[in-house]
Length: 433
Length: 140
Image (cartoon, rainbow over all chains, first blue to last red; front, side, top):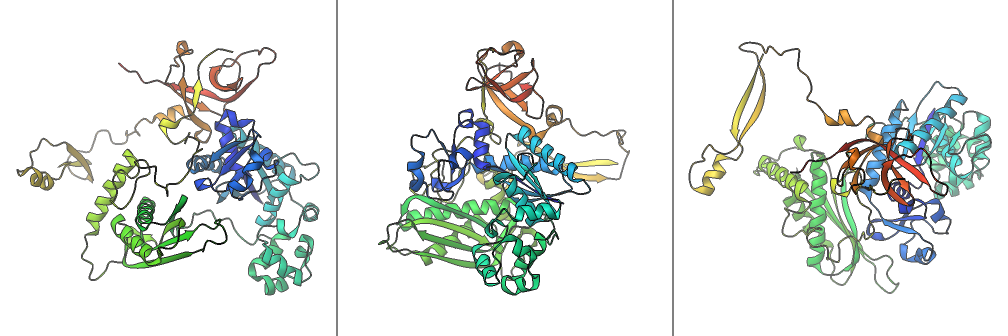
């Protein structure tokens, strides 16, 4: 059997764990740069706000509602996610980390009664140990586990405890399929729904009973797999090994638009340096560098939109901040048009390979060992004394000059309670109860 | 089996010499580098008795996924060894019982306190986690 365990309103729940003032109130978490709503507690959702809407469009809903608003604190969310995953591992044979707040767990050989008890205990332990409420859906396939998890939250099945749903028999699956729409199923997007409609399939039950080969003709192998998975025949194993990174990306929306090439260069050089640090942390080298820029998509209609990117490839893959920055700036010059005001830019490193396994160049006379030593020293200094302490002159350091217009806005970020000694939560020793 | 160490200058003599214009003196800190075991001479009498170095995490933290650190503000628990600035190790997996030192939300404030046996009417105490250890730095 496969269980899908996910955290309820994960980011909002994490904030409520550490901030006693947020615990009893609606909580909203905004994306990088405070742009959109990326998480909201249940009572905040009840105010009628929609996820992923720009903040300024929903601001009026929150006024006078005692809502706590947080900028996203991914360092903290990542640490809490790791704790949850550790707990899941002690309860399952294998764990696939599907996203920051969702894991597939595999387990077997229990009776329906025992599966329910297992789900309840997992839920209790995760909540007690981390303070985060989680939902558990258990079923024979990933698609059904996802459905079971959906039911555990939105529409509890009869005789089920809160937060746990078990679809162990064909009857239970059938009952659950009767209570959802096609669009609620995992992997069924709007395009798939349109194509299925042409086959006369409009409900989840009809999809389960459809001819898998006909579905494959119209919706591809992914559609066919969904049919089998809905019948309780698992088509995909858990992916327990984290795949090697395919690329490293650092991008930001600016707090206000930037038109000046110098200022944009400073931002891109900083992103390149940050990407290089990520690259070296995994001992990788990049075969290509791409830079992309974008105007403000929410600007008034008369403002001309522009988005572009350019890439360069290295003959010998590089991990050196100097080379990566140079390449990123070269790309920027190629896509920069002076008549636009830019809202977002980013640097993408691709063609990643292990540093020791980089194919050397026949005419390459650079000293890569020396470059590696230099980068290691710089990384170490920056780790100990703060990012950007040693940097190229083209790049800027967040800490030293936070007033730059392109600097990310995160006015309401909570402390990194679990990973920084100087940001630990405070417990007051005062009056005795 | 013998273990061989090589001492080397922490700062490169080349760099030092170039900067100062004189050969590198040997007062720079020495770094011991372990080069691996060498089969020569007398075998170590400690062979078979080696232990891992002591690890405070192992002593103080039973459940890493459930353990959080707090900083104390205030001196009212100094008789318990908890002082202003102390570090609390809080284990959320422990069952809170009256008499234990806990971190709790007490009338809207996150406090460290001894969990009371009884509460007066109208008061509320929600335990966040049980304090299992205190680390206090001694400053001269």
